[in-house]
Length: 499
Image (cartoon, rainbow, N blue to C red; front, side):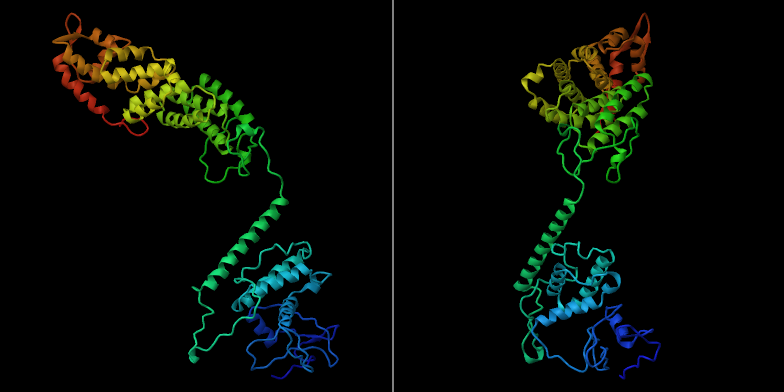
């Protein structure tokens, strides 16, 4: 291929004697195709004239370094190969145009040498492109000397460990010798991969350590005793709103939407007043669930957390919401196990009554076996155990006496299964009293507040009531209806709701 005269094809002379084409030359086009672009070489002119590209149609790849065509230098030691790679990379970077100082620091030179040493032959072109991008960005941002090139991870094109020896030449397969240098199952290859992953892990750890040293210190909570398992991922809320509706989290919590402990204390007092004044359970339940969520995301576990769950559980019992009550009861069991103060005996009695409602004999026996002698002396726990004993013995008279004397809010739980026990008791009364029994006696034994309430209960069971001198029931005719009524209570779902 004949060389093109500088006066042709729109070329212009630079101040240093080099030429540049207004249009891309064939050799530069090949350079772009092979992965190197924007090549700008500014070498010094030799005594025989300016440097120029050597272009030969027989060449398989373009030369990216300036060559003095008048004087060929003999090949030197392998160290020249490193310098060649360095000069190739520096020639492809417009350092002289973007920075006043084109001198690379020693750490960057070492970084480039390590990158080429850790790169395979097939990935060198990709490595040159990646190094070009990295160093160009550093030069553009004027961080060439401020970046710690010693700990910076090598480019992704570096897929091999640095080699201290020259690669072994492949032998010809046609000569009868099999080349094993690319055997991926060889022990040597596995060892190199292991070292590479270890080195990448060390570099990543060093990078994270360098980043953490320059970040802001981790904010500490107002009192670390209120937070369970405090670490760097624990957040501290900054929201000051007292009222906030509950929304299920679909991403990491935002501290600006989370209320801190001091705000949550005021929120609890506000909700207590609103429940007494307005009695709007839909609103109160949403507010309590939002409070529980804020406590959970901040890992706050103290006596205030226990108070929030206990208050929500009592409100849920009062409104017959066993689903929310069961969630609070489960969380309270864990909080009490941590030694946090609260009304543990009150809710232990509730737990026993809840098991009686769900007829979960296994959990009842497990709870009784885990009780301490001091816990069995508590009044509420004793009452719950007495209710269990009366139901197990079929002593309905004792059961309804205990029902009328239930402490705390246990009566709300017994209300859930008192009609079931009344049907069972009516079956026993039908067998014991013949032929007729006064409705007033039935109302008293089954703990009805009024006789009219008992008449309504019997009418729902399709039991006939005679209106002679006084309302009475034929017990023989009432027995089949009492047995049929018990079929309604055969199944209880996991939340304790009958279906």
